[in-house]
Amino acid sequence: MVEHLVLMPPPTRVLMTGFEPFGGAASNSSWDAVRLLASRWDSPISLVTACLPVTFGSAIDDLLAEHSPDVVIAVGLAAGRTAITPERVALNLMDARIPDNDGARPIDEPVIPGGPAAYFSGLPVKAMVDRMRTAGLPAEVSQTAGTFVCNEVMYRLMRAAEGTGIRAGFIHVPASPALAEGTALPFLPVEDIARGLGIAAITAVELDRDERLGGGAES
Image 1 (spheres, rainbow, N blue to C red):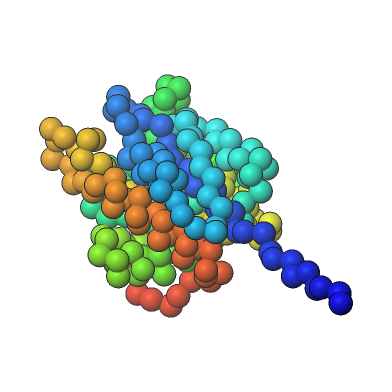
Image 2: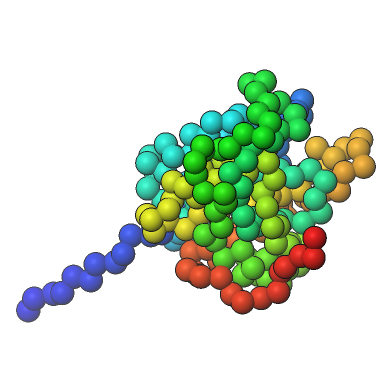
């Protein structure tokens, strides 16, 4: 009797990145949350993580080549925000309010000269927000990723993922209690941020297109 072997597809691989501290801070809630999520990850989905420098000239292309992910979620800190915010659009613009960690401060320069004016996220951002809210977490769609390093990373990521089948995008997260201590900044516990990122990762794997939900902005 011949036994038939059933070949199972390899597990989906998610690459999730956070950032090192910047602006004189001792930590960065994006990397704190990504690292915590990785330490607790219990899923057949493969999760690999990396910590990015807060410098212009992202090496995100190298990470895609190294890890061959199916989904990429870059995560960054947006101090002052009150919710976990998947980004909808990356602009071909660098306009830094403060220097990066190497002292660079580009003003009104393109991320990639001659590149498209913008890239849309390849992630199901509205579905992510809906599922995070259902789980009791503060979440909302953000329309642009700003003009600092986070936006540059998202723009380069979307350009690198274009035409590859990789679903990629960016999520901003609030400050942690440690970062907000002694300030008036709103904050969210790192445990909650990590839980939200886990929901976002699973949603990105399960859905290859977004859900038609409200999430627009008037201004």
